[in-house]
Image (spheres, one colour):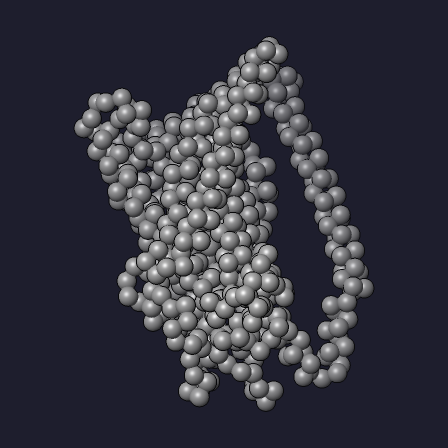
Length: 553
């Protein structure tokens, strides 16, 4: 836990706001509302850090060099009046031609120039994605190592957990809540074991009925997802007008807001154990949100890049829809709007839906109020919201280089909004999560979002089906943006080119793969041997501490 909390010391100097120390009472939140709360708020700060890292890279390697080398003779990046519209429900269309979006950069590279902005644009984004992957994978490995820690059973927790040095009533109350939450986790584990024994006693008829019910529910869920995709498609097709341009992000935000409640209600009918029910709901929600984003990107590609309709009249001159002379800006605007509306969804849920539910439960005795109950702060579902925002940011970073700056503001505000919701509208969850399990869940969600974001990035970098716009951007003169790397390499000395050619050859890649495979095999074998040694030491400790061994002494 503390490894994720810590940031480099230099980062405190560069950006104190991001590494702002979490409140000291955060551990008290964990005791009051159960394990996982501290992991969630620490996770928010972790996302704030990686977004600020992207802002630093974009500012240092892209924005500042363009500002320093700015020449008025280059003109505006995008032709006026081409696909221009406001970016949020306010008259702020001027942002479209700013450095916030891809179209704001329109430098031509000169062989005599000392700095290649085109190369910096591509490599800084690639380096950022690689850093995010390494960072997430590192935390995943740390969780893998920590999950072998010693776990107390329920009896040991009851008889040895109390701290007899506690004097104040407040500290005693907090300690009681902490022990209570820990016992609730053990209670869920025992309940799952009992449920497993009952499941083994089911007859074939009961199993057939159960599997048929689950099959029908999964069919209903599949139909709901298809309906959600169709709604997104209809709103995307209708978003050509200025007044309805915000329908796609509103539709996606609405689906992400209300569909999890339906999925949770359907999962309760499938007769799973509480832990399996929560896990299944989380998996379905993750697939739903990532699929909605993926389908929206596909619909954008079909409409803007003419996928499947390249022979259409509007697609003939440029290879993409001529209505979008700067199509990268259009995709960047959609990602910008989705980031804004995802945050607005969080805002509406915290300040509209949650207070209304709290008031309804407090002042009404109706059946609906009793069924709803007071809201619980469910860590997995709140993580889903923030991971969705981060996935959108990763997806749009090529088309909107400063989108992580918007993400920093959204996540920073989300921290205090969620804190307000936690204390004002929520009660401790009846289904608690271990902190280690929460960390694992966070990293898996982030990895899935990162892999999804790599797909449009790969298309933008390497695919000829996504040829750069001719009217704007740094790569207007290239068939594929990655050709800028080949152009930069071609002016290097012959010896350097030879080394790079060998480093990118199949022979070198195969040799490197074999070497890494051998190293990985050795590491896995060593880890397995260490695990066997640990198990033997545990058994030896049990034998030494057994009553027979103590009597022999």
